[in-house]
Length: 168
Image (cartoon, rainbow, N blue to C red; front, side, top):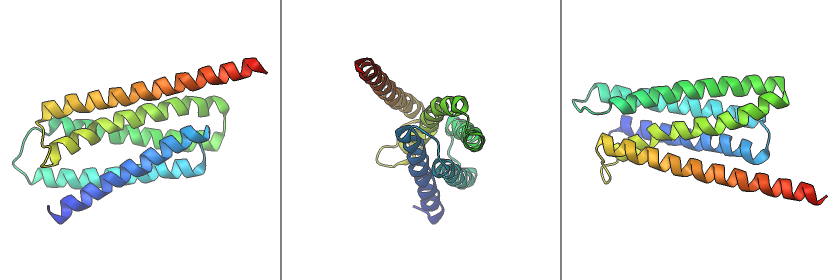
């Protein structure tokens, strides 16, 4: 593994850590804080750095089949940028409506961001090394399963909160 690939892999993995920490930290706290906003920006910076490095590696390679990965990766960066900007604006305004809308958007962006992350992992790890089509399908299935778990947990929490509120 080349030093450039190691650097890109670490950067994108740090993006996963920062972004996940920010999204789920915000979900758990039930509010958006400056810490979460900074984590979103750190995730974006790491993902952009890793993606640009991977793009540089890919441009020097004769391998093909990464077109969908490149497209989804760039779309994910754009979504992350929109997300980080919105987080900054919502945090500064402090409006409950803006914060609530942001909360739902935040999880959706994280889930969409996972698609190219998982595709890259499945295609790029030599021990797995799936073909692009299989990697896309697998990543969509994994993300859909995660979304179902998150939505299910949210519904259970909402029911519990409603039941708890009706007891008082």
